[in-house]
Amino acid sequence: MPETDNVENKMPEETVIDEKNGRVYELGYLLVPTISEEVAPSVFGNLKELVSSLGGEIIASEMPRMIHLAYVMTKVIENVKVKYDSAYFGWIKFEMDTEKLVELKKQLDLNPDLIRFLITKTVKESTLAPKKFAGGGGSRFRNGVGRREEKKEEAPIDKEEIDKEIDAMVETAV
Image (cartoon, rainbow, N blue to C red; front, side, top):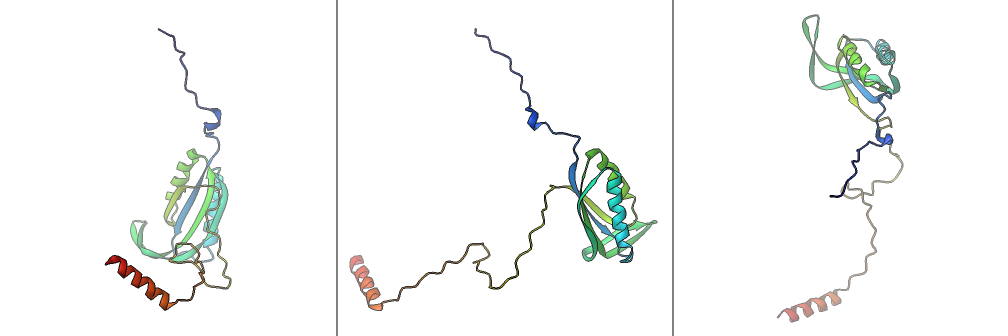
């Protein structure tokens, strides 16, 4: 019986994930509308500072802006349910170690200015759609599919020739 070599399956060094590098996350949040427009930027700054204090590196962010909510949201503040139909919406994209993310969530849960927040894993590259050129001319796309319409040169129609072809078809069918 021939001997076979025992081969160990080793993961190539290239595929080993370096846990020291942080992952990229995005924090989307809704601030209570009861804060004034002058105070909203300072709350935004405090959120960015919180992310930075936990070792996060800010990649991109957007200043919160007032939006109308799709449905009424409630938040319990000092044992009273408060209902909101509008809020300040903002987001922060950052890179952070996964261990620190739990601490960030705990801190955000304690923030009375937040109605809701969501932390998602994302990519570092910009995912915003590029702005479209508002130049002249209408859309040349058919049915929204994205194919350009081809302009066809139309040949003049000869009715006598069409009649001859129809007669020939009728004769062969009979």
